Structures are given as structure tokens and as C-alpha cells.
Image 1 (cartoon, one colour):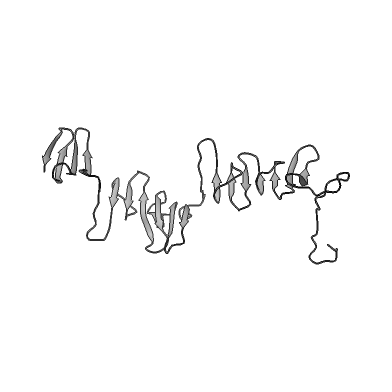
Image 2 (cartoon, one colour):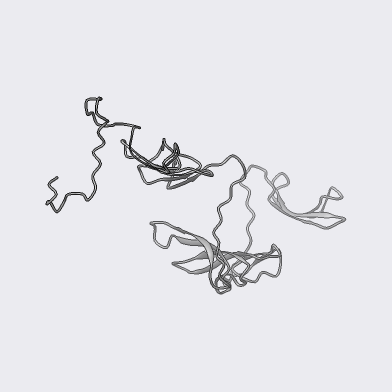
Length: 231
């Protein structure tokens, strides 16, 4: 480029090899730019194939930062942590227990969560905590609908109680609805199956069931005594 050209780069590295090699251009994994401390260590490498490495002289992705697990940006934009070949937008690979943390140090009202947004109409959900206005209590975990019929659809409290249709469940499972025919359904599609609800305390266990092998009768069955109490 002419120095006077407005499109000429301010700094240009040609990538040619040293004299005595015929002036051929560097290619592949050969470095065309190295930033070092003056010793043998390299702080940054730019290879002829376009890969950039920080902390590594042989970056295996378009952008690679080593140290710890290593972070890599592939040519398709995928980001890998612990892997130089990420198979999705974010691909995390480790050899032990793995955890993704979303954290805020803000008080109640500054939610921490993950939003799941799809292309379909109203396909917009969030899993969140730290916002009582959405979840009932700041330390509740809420499954929240952001569009369509908005609001918290299910919450899990600190004591383990689960609420569906309520952000303040009073029992282990609390289902609330304004629909007149609201009910809990237990379904089994197998032949001669017996869908049931089991009630157990420290001494006895009973089942409320429909028994397919006995004319599909509704029964109260004692598991403890091994007999039908009502059919």
C-alpha cells in the first residue's frame, strides 16, 4: 500500500520468512508475530493461519488463552472452556465436578438467573432467585414466564416446599389454581396397570389406586397388611 493511501494499515506485517529461505511467506502454524518478555517465554503468538494464542505458542483455535483450563474461541464463534473444539456456543469440559455460577452481590431485587428464549411466540422463560417480587421470597427458586401468561409458574422454597400456581407453598407440594376443575392426575398407559398414590407414616402404608387386574376398580389397599380395605 502507498503510505498516502487512506486504506493503508498503520502497521503491516508481511509474514515473510527470514532471508536465505527464498522469501517465502510463513504458513500454517508458523508464527508471524510474537510478543515476549525478552527471554524464551512467549506472552502472545499470532500464527500464519490466523490463530492467536496467549500463554501458548500453539493455539488450537482462532483465539486461545491457556492457564487454568484454557479458553478458546473457534472460527465459528463457539467458545470452549477446557476444550479447543467447542461443539456449541459455550462448551465447558472438565475432568471432575462442573458447576456454572451466575452470581450477584446485590440485595433482594437484583436477580440471578438464566433466561431461555426461543423463536416461537411467548417462548420466554427464566430460572431465577434473589427477587421476591417474582418468586415470593428472595431465596426462593422460581420458574418464571416472561411473556404470554407471565408470572412464576413454580417455586421451590428454602424448606423444600414446592408451589405450583403459588409462590408461598404451605406444604411439600402445594398446587393452586382458579380453574374450577383443577385436579391432580396420575396416569399409567400400560395394560392392567395400577396408577396409585401412596400414603405412608412410621407404621403403615396405604395406596389409593385403580387396579387393572381387578376390573379396574378403585381401591384403598393396605401395603402393610397386604389386603384391600375398600373396592
